[in-house]
Every structure is written in structure tokens, then in C-alpha cells.
Image 1 (cartoon, rainbow, N blue to C red):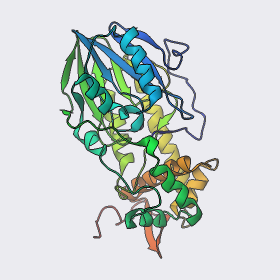
Image 2 (spheres, rainbow, N blue to C red; image 1 turned 30 degrees about the horizontal axis):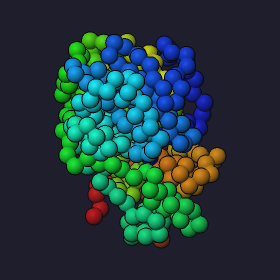
Image 3 (cartoon, helix red, strand yellow; image 1 turned 180 degrees about the vertical axis):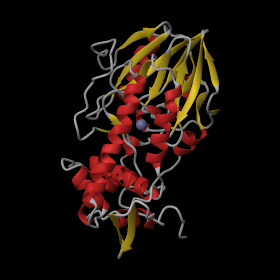
Amino acid sequence: MSHYPTPTEQTYHGLSFPWETPPKNGDWQTVADGVVWLRMPLPFSLDHINLYLLRHADGWVIVDTGLGTEQTRDVWARVFREVMLDAPVKAVIATHFHYDHSGSLGWLSRRFQCPVYMTSGEYHALFVKPASGTEMGWEMAQFFQRGGVPQEHISGLLGVIGDSSYEQDAPDSYNRLVDNQVLRIGGYDWEVVIASGHSPEHACLYCRQANLFISGDQVLPRITSSVCVTVTEPDANPLKNWLDSLQSLRTVSDDVLVLPAHERPFYGLHYRLGQLVEHHHAHLDRLLAEMSEAQTADQLMRFMFPRVRSSFDILLANGEVLAHLNFLLGEGRITRQLIGECHSYQRLLGSNESSTDMQVTHV
Ligand SMILES: [Zn+2]
């Protein structure tokens, strides 16, 4: 799953963009010595992903791959000829497991017989396959029931989850990235900075010498990355991980050029980190204000995202609302009760009261 546009308009105020227009889809440009920005097309409303090519001693290192489609491979074929001048790909780094980032991971690795570098959490996430098509396991059925999703929407959501165009292409082996590890690529040292919340163990790459920060989906200039609870872990608290990660990213210098996975490279990292935190606190405040009476997650989703129509967007919006609810449960600010098959959420009035739902695990 990828990104969800913010319901409120966010301005570019506080950020600066060295390139006014991006390369055309399928094109590229150099952003620093030995660092190429490739604009790979995507067949979605978010119509591109930024991939980065790092010049290595006798070849190239690729950061993220695009989808596993013919269109992606046609662009890569041009890049191999016209950018890499038929020099080999020496390694592929995946920031995280999402299909737009890792969809051609196995293909690239097999083609060049080169290693793949990613974190353990992201590599193993490639293999998590929820029920697809018309087959629905009890976990998925319960997940939707507890969220109060109307029966007539469920088949549409299952269709999205089972859509083969989001299939992964996992290599048979990988090299594990860990936090603070240094990757020497060409003349640069890239430090691995791990963040969480959008995906389990997302790797960013920080080059102090060139003042560059490849941020993946962890920091985007205008859209906000989805932070979702899914059937895989219904009681997860990814928003806590996300907010903690935004805080820890302040250790990266504020004057880096941020190379994000979507939209354009920009300056203003710390300002953007602050905006992202504010965005979620505004969501939390709106949710809390709406919860003086008991509500289901689906009701709250329609309140927060009234324009959402497609099954894909409903699935993301549902996961996003659950992430905010699980965060509020963890903070002891709301209660959650199982009424029949459905969870009902309500604000706690006294600030000293605490919810037992997330602090004590009732097995
Ligand atoms: Zn992503």
C-alpha cells in the first residue's frame, strides 16, 4: 500500500525545491555527482516513483525498483543503455517492501546476479500473503467485522488485497541492513537510518559528505505516507512508531537535500518533519472531538475521509483510522468495547483515567 493524500491542503511553505519541474515519467536527471534521479512511471493516480542510481567503482547501485511490470522493465532497459552505458548493476537496495519500491527486486537481482540489500523486517514482509480473491480467512472476516465495514464493501476490499498487480518479486536471498550501518558506494559513505510506521523497518540512506538524504517514503514533501493497521497485526500501533521515527530523524542534518520516493527533491527536512507530526496530531484531535459518543471505525473513517469512494482508498482510509485509534488506545485516551462482532470506540473524559485495552493484554 502506498500513500494517501491529506484531507486538508498542505502548503509548500517552509520547503524549497531546487528543480521546478521533475523529469518526464521514464526520464532522469543528475542531482549530485554520481547520483541520478529516475522518474519511474506508475499506473495509479500517484503516477510515478523516484528511484535513485548511485555510481559505483565499476558499475551502479540502484535504490528501489518500480513495479514488476513490462512498463517498468522497458524504462530500465533504456536506463541500462543510456545512463549506465551497459555497465553492470552491482547491488540493489530496497528502502521497503511495498510493491512500487520492490516490485522488480527479484528480476533485477536475477538479471545482474547481484545482491539485494534491505532490512530483515522488510525482506520478510515480502512473503506475507493475506487471503486473496473470494477466499477469506477468519482473521480477515473478523478484521472487517470488528471495524464495522458494511458487508457490501467487503468483496471490493478483498479484490484490492488479492489484486495480482501488487504481487511481490522476492529474491531468494538478501543482505541485511541494520541501523547505523555504513555502505561505501563509489566515493560516498551512506549511513543506514531505519524508521518505522509506514512499513516495518524502512531504510533511509544518509550521505554526510554530499549532504544527501534518500528518504524513501519516510519523508515526502507534500503528500503524507500512509500509516495503516492491517489484518496482519490488528492491534499494532504503527502511528507510535511513525511519530517516534519522525522525532529520531531530527538527528539528520537540517541542510540535507532530501531525495524522496515521490514528488521532488527538497530542502527543509526538519520543517517537514514538524509538519508531518502536526498532520497526525490534527487527525487525532479531530477524531477525539468526534468520539464523545461511541462510534465504529467505519463511521469514523467516513467522518475523517468523506470523499473516499474506491475500494483501494477505503482500504487505506480504514487502516489509517485504525492506526489513529490504536494510538489513542495506547495513550489511554479512548476506550474500545466489543459489542456483538464490532468494536465500538469512545473518548475517555477524565485525563487521569486510563484505558486498560492496550496497556494490559487480555489474551
Ligand atoms: Zn511505501
